[in-house]
Length: 123
Image 1 (cartoon, one colour):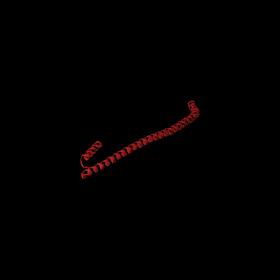
Image 2 (cartoon, helix red, strand yellow):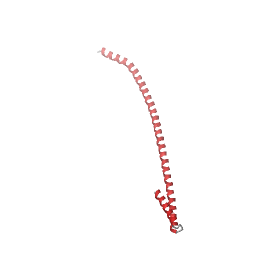
Image 3 (cartoon, one colour):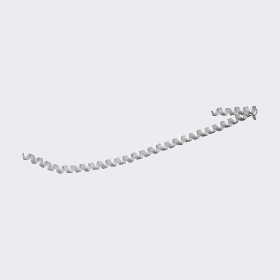
């Protein structure tokens, strides 16, 4: 599209050189080309602004995703550390309860053996 505009301007200027540039039609045509050039520049500037905004948006999205990933990894690590502490505490509690039960079992084993021996010998 830009090449067409450039060619059109070159042809117009050639026509102006060949013909009278003071005629109203040439002045109108000149103003049309001038306005067309302004519109083209405005469109190019708008395209640049849009491209810049898209680039910045992509950067913001990339930074947001990276920060989100980091926060997710940090939260996962924190949760895993808490879960590991809870698991270690539960394991220690279970080991203490098992040791307590073994002590109770040892104390009651002697009583159970005596009761069984007494029951068998009294028959």
